[in-house]
Image (cartoon, helix red, strand yellow):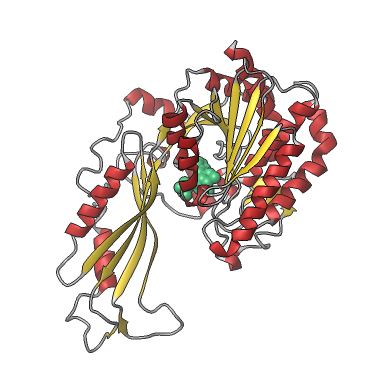
Length: 462
Ligand code: BES
Ligand code: MN
Ligand code: MN
C-alpha cells in the first residue's frame, strides 16, 4: 500500500473530526426516544460511504432501524470483502459517572494513550471501529489502490439483538454474496500486542418475574408469614451456581466443547498478567468456575450472570414493605455447540421448577444467538495476520473473546462465508460503561492495517 502513512498524516485532523461528528449523534437503539437520532446516524453513515467512493449506497428500510448498504464493485472476477459494523450504541447511563457528557466527544491524554483517546459513547463500540473501514476505503479509492470488490453492511440494531438484520440477510443472499466478511467490533490483547479474535460466545438473555401476594404488604403485619418475592428470587438465583461456581441447570453443560490439554496450553501462552488484571479493576481476587484460568473463564466456558435485579422500595430512607413482585435480567454466555434456544428452554424449565409454593414465576426470553469460532487455516485469517505483521511488526495472536456478536453465526449459515474479526479495541476502553473511549493510536492503526487486509486477501485468493 503506497502512501498509507502519509495519507493518514495529511488527513489526520479531518479523520478525527468526522468521527467526532458521528459520535455527537446519540444513536441509542434501545431507547425509542432517540429514534430520530438513530435514523440521522444512518444517513450520516450513508453519506460517508458515498464520499469514500462507494458506487451505490442505499438506506435499506426494515421493520426496525435501517441497514446502510454500500458497494464498490470493480471487477466481478475479483474477490469481494463484505464489511459489517453497527452505528447504534448502548445507552450511556448512569450519566453522573461520566467525566464528560457521552455525546460531546473530547480527546483526552491518558497514561495508556499519550496521543489521546476519544471519550464518547460508541467511540470504540462500534462507531470508531466501523468508521476506520470507511476511511480505509477512502484511502484505497482515492489513491487507486482498491484491489478487490467491497460491500458495506452497517446496521442500527446490534446492541438490541440484530433482529431486522437476520431477516435482511436471509432475504438478500445474492446482494450480500462475498468471499469473506470483515468486522472490527472486538478487541486486541494490548496496544503493542496485536491479536485476531477467533471466537465469540453465544448468548441467551432472559427476564424473570416472581410474583407473591397480589399487592405490596406491610412487612411487619405480613413479614415471615408469606413468601417475599425478593427473598425468593435471590435464593433461586443463588442456587443457579454451586460451591465450585458451576452452573446447576440440568443439561446446561451437555454440549459444551471441551478443549484438549494442548489447546488449553496454547491458550495459556497468550500474554496475561493476573496482577494487572486485578489492579485495573481494583479487586483483590478473581472469582469464577473452579478448575479454569481467568482467560478460560471469560472465553471458552459458559457463564450465567444477573445483569439487573429490582423490586420493592429503593427510594430514599426506609419503607417497610414486602413487594408483590421481584424481577431480574439474566444473561448466559454460551460456547460452541451450545444451542441458545435449547439453553433458554433449559433455563425456563429449571427456573420454574425451583420456585417454592407461594410464588409464581414467569420467564420471558429476550434475544440470543449462537457462538462462533473461526479456524486459522484459511486465507482470510492469513491475510489479516499478514496485515498486522506489516503495521505492528509482530505476528498477531489468535484469541477467543468472551463477547458476543450473534449475527456472525447467522452470516456463516446464510452466506456461507467466514468472518474475520480484526478488532482494535482494548479491554480498558470501557465499552458499555461510563467514560467509553477509543485510543487515537488504535483508530489510526486500524485505518492503516485494513487496506493491507484487502491487499493480502486479494493476493491469496489468486
Ligand atoms: N462489540 C460488542 C461485542 C464484543 C466486544 C465482542 C468486545 C468481543 C469483544 C457488541 O456490540 C456487543 O456489545 N454485543 C453484545 C451482544 C448483543 C446481542 C447485545 C454483548 O456481547 O453483550
Ligand atoms: Mn459492538
Ligand atoms: Mn456493544
